[in-house]
Image (cartoon, rainbow, N blue to C red):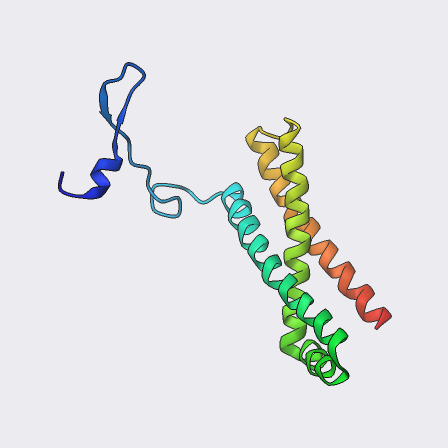
Amino acid sequence: MKDVREALMIGRNSEGKLVRRPISPFMLGSAYRFQTSSATSILHRITGCALGVGTILMTLWLVCAASSDGAFSVIQAFFASWIGMLVLFGFTVALFYHFCNGVRHLSWDAGKGFELPDMHRSGKLAFAATIVLTVVFWVIAFLVW
């Protein structure tokens, strides 16, 4: 064996004979055509990570609010700045997308929407619902603020 990776490509078939496993190319390479389902899957993972980071920031905001007026005014000034507003906007986009795509996954868990046209339609619907929910949320937020 020239390389350790070759050992990982050796397996056994159902009869117990040694066979070489096929190598799957990376999904963003030239072997695959990028599809809506690829984008929704990747974005679901990215927004899940973004929600984790955003939740830490919201927790920091709560800790500052509970600790002192000075700490709260610093974190409040950050969230009121343009960069803070951008972070909050990104957090809401991630929240609504992850929610909408999560509902899509729940319908798959129920055994519905596995046909390719249905998958593309529900993916586009998740994107559209994310945009609508985010815009409505921020319009209401600025009207109340």
